[in-house]
Length: 494
Image (tube, rainbow, N blue to C red; front, side, top):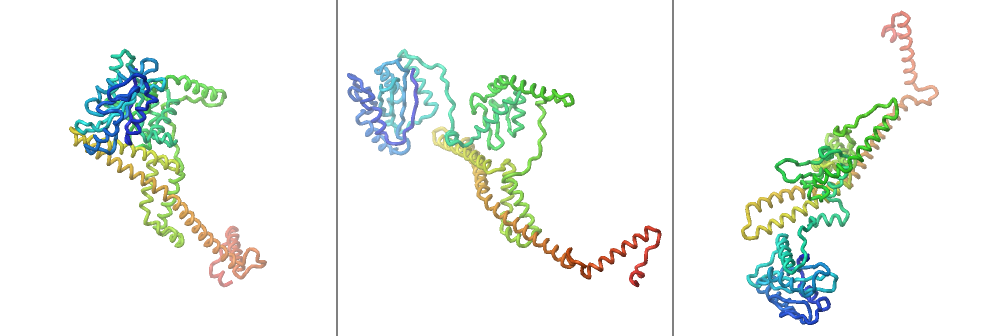
């Protein structure tokens, strides 16, 4: 059994060739090949091991292709105890002759310093025949592995008939996981795990996932089920999340924990039925819970208050000194309104949520940029469908333009919030101070004119108001006893 892996080499090849042909790792007394090093399991194809680097470099200089990829490093590992060093080296040489021997300069070294014998194969990136560069793709790797399996069968070695291939992971997602930053796929996995623990059936699972704001595409015309996170820009296939998140596996997980959910529901029913006067409630899992209107918090509350204050400034409904604090901000009214609608549409309230959304946008930009780069690389290949590739690349460019616009919006919000908080606090403080001065001054003047509550006899104004109140009380008593009220002229005569 042999396992084949490949690594791209973009730096110097001389150190790598020296490692592959290291006599301490490849020593084998009495073994010698035509272009190899004596007493070592090394061989050269279209070049000698001693001068392999200089010959490969001459080929690159002849065709003017010394930049970018310098070579490819293939590793062919065998099962421990299944083969001998000489047989492993023979299989590696036959592998090179079938795959590269007629077009590229190749060096092979069989290392025996580990429990598993393995071949290191260095292939020059430029062909010495026509100057074309070797292109390593997943398809070519699968073909090379098939050739290696055929050689193993010919030599009586075991072969993995149904290899389990682990799904690849994008570099941006892997980097985010290494730095403990949230990813869109990670958030989707967490939500699916939570919903599975609450659902009874697969249909109920979809309903509860939609209640969380997800968009789900399920129909007969689609081969795979896709979902979109409320804060994501595109849809994701469930199969891309891992084996535990394909529909069949989700149904199995729901069926496996259905007894736990039923037992919890029975316990809740028993608790409510213990009291005689208590009402009995029937569990209806398909009935969505009523949604209460949430209070604005965080950034959305700040923007709402700030826009409200700017509206008052624009309509001149605040004092002049307060308008002076915010008059310059009226030029940015439309910008602040757009930022508020961005927070509202994406349901962002805190600095952490804005940062997470910005990280998710960065991951999406990296993925789409890498995809567009691969399309442009395919465009340079002969026989490529130029019209289709350019159309797809144009769609990706439009999507990237929207994503980068949202990134700029997140950055603008994070930058504007501290200044907004400071200016709003200053404006509110000034408004409160002016209101307190205005109200306090009126109360002081009224007390001064009335003599104050502590005056012993009151002023002339107090005496006049006292006489007027007594006359009014006398008129009201006279009217109540049946007498006619005095006329206004009589009051003046008296």
